[in-house]
Image (cartoon, rainbow, N blue to C red):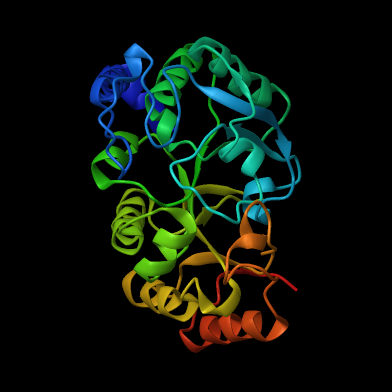
Length: 300
């Protein structure tokens, strides 16, 4: 793994220090709340100084190159930098279900998943705990940690934060949720989502490029984009798919998801109160083909 070289050179330790320094006036995400997390202050994401996780288990429900035949070592982090009114994992992301633990305990969870046969460590909604994750990695490497790291994010991230992960993350798995400002703000409290998200995805692509698989079809490096189709075209699917094709290339792998249903606060939110129709999903699939994006997965 590339992060072993950064560990040996001392660069990983410097990244840990740089990341933790940003918690004194936290600017890890686009909200840039400037709270001092060392003093117990919390900002938009409500995360504290220590990492908090809801679970750390083998997961077989991800995209095939991530789950493989042994499962992905998935760690769900509590809280989130978005307020998606339709979040299907809202007990974790919005209510903060989970346990607070030390970075050494987080390192042990990673090592335990490795011993369980996981193909990778899949960090779900990790951005607001980036310093703690880097510290856990620094602690785990001398104990034999060697798995690829998957950065499974909502895509609302800044380029300057993502540069701390260059050479560390092997596989980026970001969402691209919206192509318009109004639904991004109304449904997820994410001002500037489109431009911030696109800049973040370009940076992820710069770091890891197109998806690379090993001889067993397991992801070793690269980018997979997720796009959830929303009712009434709220996600702007065609525009997002066009951008992917024109900016990243036709080889880009993406998962076009039709699993939306009105979870959490969606039932009382106009525009989100129903499942997507077969016709709405078919329109998104047609756009996928219109732009020549053939790598990835659609859902029946």
